[in-house]
Length: 444
Ligand code: SAH
Ligand code: SF4
Ligand code: F3S
Image 1 (cartoon, rainbow, N blue to C red):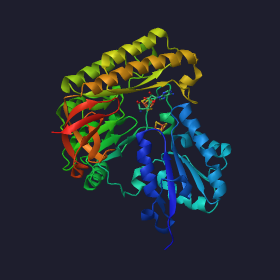
Image 2 (tube, rainbow, N blue to C red):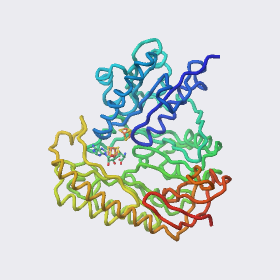
Image 3 (cartoon, rainbow, N blue to C red):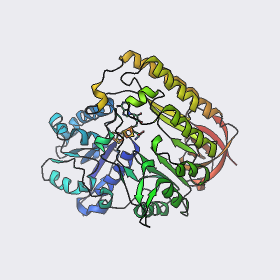
Image 4 (tube, protein in one colour):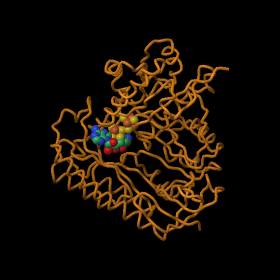
């Protein structure tokens, strides 16, 4: 018996990368590869292989990868056998350029070819460099081992990948490729396996998750709502969430599910990006501020307590003060429990990158105004929870002895005094105090 080699993975970007990192760890594990496999480590110093699973969405995210790679140099000097790989969206976007810019990189692998990692690592361990940024026809998930080791109460499940929408600012259609939905039977089998390992909450993932259109066991094309209803029938599963959605794919059946489907949680991340129709058109979003507000109205009609979150881009090329004011207005009109706002970042290869930027100081000032409004709404949402009851899925021990931490129906962190037996269980809690990022409750 040789001691297994160690693998450290650092994950950047969205939840799809979190999911992919787990799949990569499994593909390279001793369980899958025997003696050639790796055991996970949290410490880069201990690792024989370090993989950076990267994000290309904004300039800062991409540049962080290069500064982190630079910091691996001393580790490589101390351990010449250390192998370094770059996976994810920077790998897809920049390919061989990464190795040219940072020679210590041994491996570059795009998001659609993780199932080829074991073969690539065999070459790397033989002293070669390996690069694969194909977007093959075959479904990578069919070729990845299905081990799903961790038995945490919550799990991600990627149901759909890629995007055909081509918003003018966004790299995702280029880094993740065209929209592809996984077949229903595979997803239900994976969900069943998760629930059998103690998972109580599943978050369905996709860059455009509500565009899901997978082949059903009946040969029919299933919508995301169909899939959610099938999961609703699964014994042992308590909660269903999904992210990220596009307004144009908010179909009637999915809106209705928010009213009728008991396990579907009342929280929806629905990015609008801007409140100005002129800017939405320039962004190629293919919806208007009014059509977005109409969707919100219909959702709240069936689920009045629905909590909403969104994404906003500030300082998109051509954005005037009036356009920005329209963004502030759509935030006031919607009322968000949480929202994420970003200063526009020109990305190579996207249509908007050719256009003239809003001056940086103007964009920064607008971002601060928007963030102040969003923060105020977030405080109001938290404060409004005091005195209310919610269910909480307890996920881990709290900071104080006797305390457990979990998430409310509305995805808020909640801590409460509770017996350890409630770990991994859903319980009713009454909220007694609210802070910006957490709530305190008592068991009912
Ligand atoms: N598929 C999702 C998320 C895409 S990336 C969706 O369609 O909403 C997450 C967020 O990053 C986007 O919603 C957008 O607000 C932001 N984003 C994407 N490209 C950006 C860019 N070039 N500059 C600034 N923010 C960007
Ligand atoms: Fe990017 Fe737009 Fe696709 Fe979302 S819908 S991933 S913002 S191109
Ligand atoms: Fe980033 Fe790629 Fe996700 S660019 S946001 S890691 S899809």
